[in-house]
Image 1 (cartoon, rainbow over the protein chains, first blue to last red):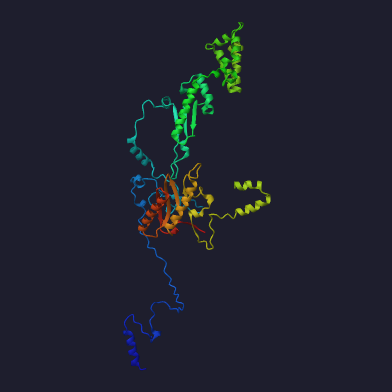
Image 2 (cartoon, rainbow over the protein chains, first blue to last red; image 1 turned 30 degrees about the vertical axis):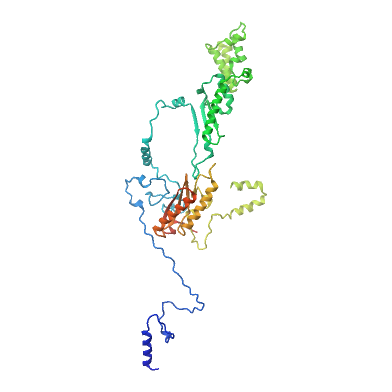
Length: 334
Length: 159
């Protein structure tokens, strides 16, 4: 093969159109590699194409809003309602978390700050704004109800109901049906007998110290029904206490709820002593009045207290003083 | 510890050692140390469960588990559903725990996400999540996200 022939052949190979591959390759060792990689004999045709890791284009973000905030801005416009903490909006250098070795974590990327419910929407100026906006819907306070005593006099009955707010989609709470009615017994216009009967009828529901009767109703399914039932019970109690049954005449001294000095032998003894040496009948004892007699009043008070409140140092001392005043008036005066 | 104090009353003395030795092996919600010591933990992950309410807060805020609270079981199931839906929808984007706060019937979902996808996609996902969850749970949902540049921003320590 001469040199000319070789040149011719090479020329033909160069002149070949792109994409046309000849059946024979004359000079395989000189063929330029298609890419920079070292080719490997791949008999099973399982060429592995490693695909590059997906590259994320960095999102363009603005600098934190807190950096460009004017000092005299209206904070309630920045944070109008309840919202989870956002570090770029709140211009405070907050830190949250516990780290035994370093400082607490800062506000950026801090999930602890996002957990805590914040009150950034009810700052004092925001509350003031709310109040001034609501003021137009308010009415004047009614005249004659300036003090609590006035309120108690004009509205003696108190109704207590409770509404429950849950952090769940349901607004129904079975406990909201309970109605409590409170009333001072002294406002009910009861005489001595009716008052005593009422206290016996209501039992534990009457508080002696504050003189308040409490009726709690929860047996009906709705609040309205419970309220109606409570008012019905109160009415029934009132009228029942005002009636005088025939069998109530059989009340004995042992049935009395308190010690009453006038009904007891103590008064008879006292009257006998003061009127000595004349004889006293039962009628005399009944008609004898101690309104003018301070010694008698003191004695009555001491005896009543001793028997109603029980024996202690105070009541016993008081009784001793009173008894001495009755029996030995001259020693007390001296 | 109360439990441990009362145990000796019920058990023979020899068993105490066994129980006390088992106490060392409690592993729930505690992360295993890696060999190279390069396993990243967030602040929430770094604290074991007994530190809740001492050095870290709860991930679910609601009144259902208080005395006489309503729907405790339903709320727990809903929370778990929300967590799974969020991690699936915001795939590979959430860098913290999902915090679910309930106020009346509003559910606020807070999380820290990574700035990996375009802002348009983030807006779409917020709307998508809010719409679908509020349809399923029948209450207003608010998604309140914070973004960080990458996951290293929320790492508290490496173990």
